[in-house]
Image 1 (cartoon, one colour):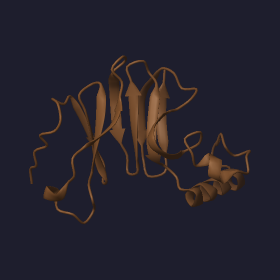
Image 2 (image 1 turned 30 degrees about the horizontal axis):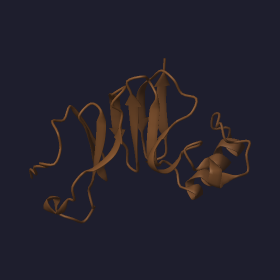
Image 3 (image 1 turned 90 degrees about the horizontal axis):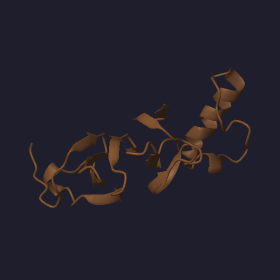
Image 4 (image 1 turned 60 degrees about the vertical axis):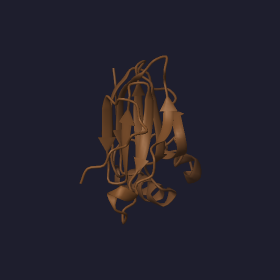
Length: 150
């Protein structure tokens, strides 16, 4: 099935997941939600999520429940959710008791804070990930976000 979205400027990039499509003209990102039980012709107009006129957009990724954008100056912006607070407690317990690698949040007892972007997800709007510079790639999965920093 093909659908035409007339309300967008010429696009240079797009990324899709099971729940959304993200599109970019190189300076702005639009999201188009895909309701799971709805036909494609019932889609709503795309929503502009962010604009980066000064630095542009180098890459964007639509994940299962989140979106990532790398700007032209190597900053990483994320929104959506990677882990719910319940999933976080389970993963944290496995990391601490079974030795599954290093988790930067494993020393805190406040799981609600860990589920925000200071940890692993929970912002409805694009939020810059603090402390990351020179990001060249990003991957989003059901329970993870990975970034390559050079």
